[in-house]
Image (cartoon, rainbow, N blue to C red; front, side, top):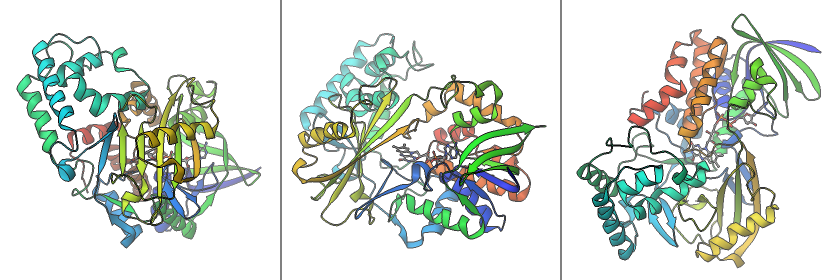
Length: 473
Ligand SMILES: Cc1cc2nc3c(=O)[nH]c(=O)nc-3n(C[C@H](O)[C@H](O)[C@H](O)COP(=O)(O)OP(=O)(O)OC[C@H]3O[C@@H](n4cnc5c(N)ncnc54)[C@H](O)[C@@H]3O)c2cc1C
């Protein structure tokens, strides 16, 4: 067995690990990246299919952080393209825009639906009462119809939890709820607001050739100054005196024991815990018991010989008539992902536990998506010439930060604090992942991890994102 001393060993070539590797390689520090897959990019990679290049599901770059926006801009140059940010909601055959910028304050809602929601809201507020579930809480606050149309169906699909079975949100049960006037003001503000909270300077941008273009460029940077080993299997990790002392991996059929000064890990928390924390190493499967990762995201790509039938880049599907949670339209990102006159849509399904969708064949799942989209007149099924189904066990499909930051996961993350040379950089959104990678590399370069610990602590980022004070440079 070969032994290798390395300054920085990076586990996983997702956007976080790649960002760390790229910054270190540029500084001449020769990082070594071990990746399980055959390609770089993790959940931010692209899929190439004929003339199409598409992202892994809906992939919006929240460029909330100036530092990350500048990093991506430096890599992509003119290929970092602005696009008119337009998302929508699909409910009962109607597409409702998320922002009033495109169709005014009714956002495409039919008049009957709009008036129905208004009466429903007033009725709910007059009825009052103490909610016993999350569903009752939101129905009594916003009215049943507004809640169902704008959020409930999508959130239930994404989290796999029925609102009727969840307790009311903390501190809001009893009398802690906002009053009628405050709620009405909040609804009116949201209805008319054009403020973009997920971007730096309110501009949305996307790489011309998909998000994987950023990953490919970072991988190129690493290869120029360091090393990348694909299809590598991490077999064991050892620690002593508060440090990770060795990582044994199978690389190109050979077992190597790396003795790293620093370890940057972008691999999911549960896998790292199994490798490094003795109390989890015997847990069954890939994951420790404490963490619920029985989730699989299934992505159905439909390739069509027709122009897109709707202008939005993505639709959140709140409609309970379908299992589809989100639909992405890659033409709308102002890039070169989809050839002219053609369309590629991706339908996302979120599966939990023994989900009946999982034993189905890929063609059957694709048929579920195609039949629904055809019925909703979002595609003409006779124009579909190719399909692709991707299953991602344990993947987080973004917008799920509350779930990602569950009490069990926060506790587990805190256990890694004992390892002073370990930088855990896996995050639930691409900008947070990229920032974590950059800050880990800067900590290694400066020899002090104080900034890393302060800036990219997942809990601190959560608080910052909620207070919208996000664009620290
Ligand atoms: C369907 C979907 C839609 C999404 N939409 C958005 C969005 O719109 N906006 C957004 O910001 N984010 C979105 N995300 C989330 C985003 O993709 C992730 O937050 C981001 O990719 C996390 O980056 P990471 O580097 O931390 O981890 P990952 O991207 O998960 O990369 C981890 C890497 O580690 C490798 N690995 C795992 N285990 C091992 C091992 N044992 N040994 C070696 N390598 C290993 C994996 O193969 C992978 O390459 C979405 C995710 C999904 C699934």
